[in-house]
Image 1 (cartoon, one colour):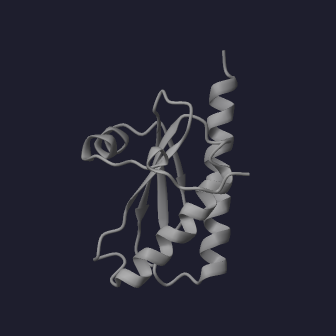
Image 2 (cartoon, one colour):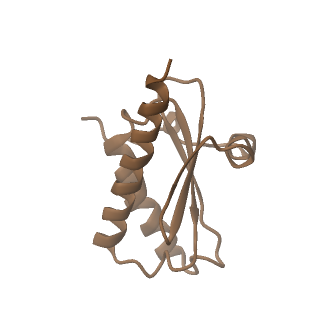
Length: 123
């Protein structure tokens, strides 16, 4: 399993973020964060983060959240196919401890992958 996180797996430009935020076709929600996704027409999934300071105050906490969610994404990005995913913070995200956040991220990524595969299987 390849666990690298290259530039090709990231949303980089404001236009890429705007495309997902303006018209998400899939959603997976947790009390502390939401995953919005849209087809990208590429062979691999990409991910981006919207973690404003008012939701996650400290840079250390923002980096920890991104690191844990990226780890979940890397483990499951093949199942996510050609999706662009934006992770948006909600209140309380920084308060989650590492095991809880990891379990929640894994669960929501699997949920999103299941929705994506069900949609792709439809004729």
